[in-house]
Image (cartoon, rainbow, N blue to C red; front, side, top):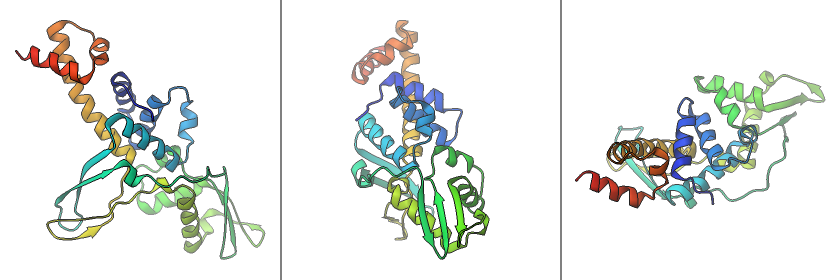
Length: 243
């Protein structure tokens, strides 16, 4: 299990800050696996990427996950608390580079979505995002031996492809089950480990920057030296600096 050190966390936060969701998830993954080419990490299927992020997050911040979501019925903020193991999908065989679905007379060859595909969907509504994702991931479509375009696929075939993607890469879609204590509404909020981990890192980085500023001004130490300290030792110095 990979553990990100304080300097690595700070570097990942700095590298990912100019980007949006998929880019930030990749920044965290690149920090955890510096010997792997970023392009290779970007080509990982989303579920394979998220499985790695879950392990890195568990090693860095621990197995317990606590967050807040808004009830879609009444707007109440609801706490979610669970273990990383609770949302880790059962391991599956690594999928081939291309998969096939035959349904309703159509034969579709496709690949699994990756971080590059998710980045291309930013700013699109659900319908346009679905069409773009299909356009990027579907490699070949035929009907009765004749090539057809992705746009000609009927809805039931699109659903069959989506189901096949989910079965081949189950970690890509994680839904929790919760109920609002205020109105009793139940719903399955989605859990995005990339977004959640990034928010944790950002909160940690802002707090740590403040600590570095205090200790650097008080003792004249470099950021590198301060980040190399254990959190316990850093806190002791902060208490002494506060007088």
